[in-house]
Length: 212
Image 1: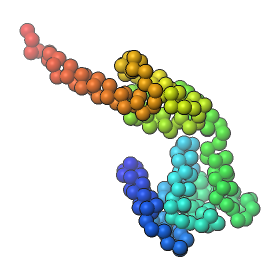
Image 2 (image 1 turned 180 degrees about the vertical axis):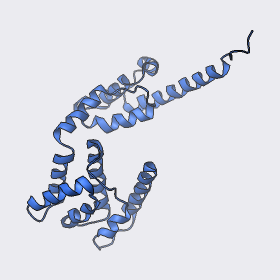
Image 3 (image 1 turned 90 degrees about the vertical axis):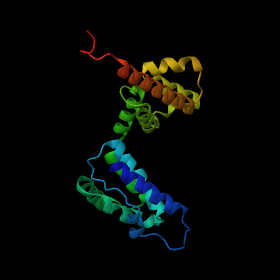
Image 4 (image 1 turned 90 degrees about the horizontal axis):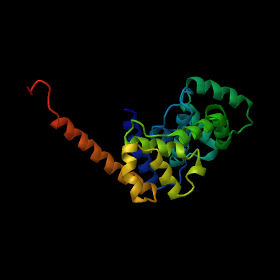
């Protein structure tokens, strides 16, 4: 269900960005039409950061004026996040800009300690029992918190390859791949080959009781 909602939101955002732009500024109805997510304050730090990024994109796509963005977006805050914002709003100088809101939001829901934790997660990241695509998605999510490890394509490719399952890595070491895209493409192919081999072995394995 979450994936379907994200796909719907992406399509609505695409339509909004490609639609002819009129002169009328956007309002709360334009913003809500893009199906923005609710934020409760109970989300994980990385999900909180993603919410703020997505909400910023939707506000801009809906052409909500800068001076109205906080008033429009705050209706998406519920529970813990709503209580937090009522206290913040009372102490901040008016009018509250979106930049000010974002800084306060980061300080509360995605502090420096959480960003450091994301960096450490990337340093330790391995594929383990994930699929190649699942590992790649996590790699992309976390790599921006350790940019010094992926400063160019070759370093990016090398770090990604190092985290792959060993039975996939052995097929890649002799190929001297230089880009992340190349490593990802070959890793997917190797994964499919290994899965096919495993399936064939399962089909040809003798069943107990059939041999005497």
